[in-house]
Image (tube, rainbow, N blue to C red; front, side, top):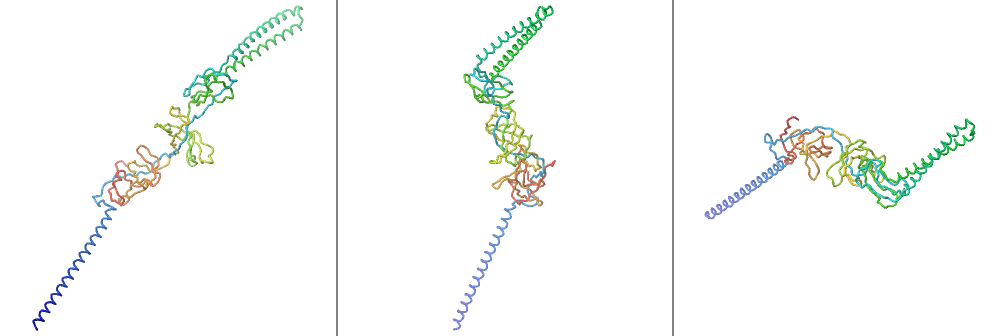
Length: 389
């Protein structure tokens, strides 16, 4: 009996001991799980902070060159497009009675002087008329000479009583009539010669021949219309289309650079006239930019222009400081805590090595001059200012 009780007590102790070991095992497992979770959370938190500012603090922060751009007088520009044309286009036609064209002496693209003959019209009939009038002048001059001689003889005889004063007066009248006929004939000849001269189609002023619309053998008259078109003095212009706001920004005398389509060169010009009216449909006006002659400037061609509208004070940065992405253009600035911050900017005029900042900067910021692509927002850096700035 006592043996059986002892066995039961031993079995009970063994069962209780195994249960205690199971509880301790679960406590240890739970502790390990909690420790793993805590470590994972700490690593995740540290990883997020490292993503924001991966650079080490203190002396290990990278050195970056910064510039304070300030503000400079920067030329404000206006972009425009338009067509090329002669500044003063001169249509040339028939000034006289016309006829059949006998010769055409010039070609498009040729320079001519004022009064130079461009084409001639057959004048065989007019030449005969002029010769006839010249002969009539000789007859009238002979009649005048004879009348004058008779008058002088009569005046020498009147004192002797051989001729009356009435005869002398008749001879004076005959002499005066002969002189008048001579003057009329001379005037008629001058008129005919002037008409003949107008049969030559001449350049009204020096310039460049743009078009030719006549050929030998063609019958022309004052109703024919334009035979040649010329650019006075060879001066060209670009007629730039501008919006109302841009037209207000520029003025007569503003300089401009014009680039014709297909041409790599730019041509310097100057605004010489602004349109006094605005087109009610397009809400645009015309700025006429005067250009010196160049074979590349062909009237009727298309061109683009950059017009200097005036000066504005804007920060200027080296092109190495500019970055861009899908959000637009930006720069990195260094704040008071020496951390990198992104700043979106609007670009102004661009030169070979400088970029004007039209918006986004005041000019007092410390801007990262280069290597911005290797930085991240929030990163701690050691700013270095170039010598001489």
